[in-house]
Image 1 (cartoon, rainbow, N blue to C red):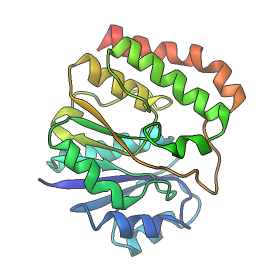
Image 2 (cartoon, rainbow, N blue to C red; image 1 turned 120 degrees about the vertical axis):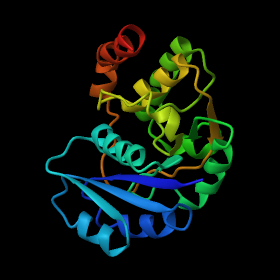
Image 3 (tube, helix red, strand yellow; image 1 turned 90 degrees about the horizontal axis):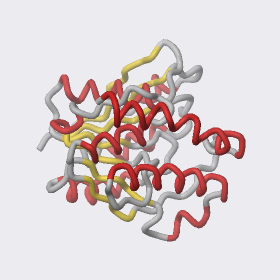
Length: 224
């Protein structure tokens, strides 16, 4: 079983080193997708032994992880582990995700299966719940945390569900996987709130979610 970790990173030079060090203990290769960073994220990542793929400009997490997925497909890996660069995801939990991946095509680390979600702001919890409810209803699957970025994919299944929307990549990908009958599991993983940076969830974006979701849902249900 050959495994590669994909770490999307944008101006994460202060945390990327320790994330790579922890992650490399559990996978065969660590790939950092430097998504147009203006700091020395790429240099730090290389210093800690990661293979770095650099975007000339920032595409967002969706674009960065897609690049990492394509790397895994081209290099014939069996499983992809996705890890955030900010330290929110504990690399020590990677073996747990990989254990569940032996009988699944997608494994999602869920904050809703433990108490760590209670520390998140209300607006962010509402956003996660909104997205998750849409995927549960349309995909016919029982999940709790569709926006979680701490995941494992079986590469043979990932080839079928490469997302096209960078705004809601996790929603599109999970819904597409459900529609295609791929096996999806969730595992309880505690994820503390990151100390630095800004969340994608705000009151303004929450109001726009129903409109922005339309394109993502139609993309999967009508054109896949």
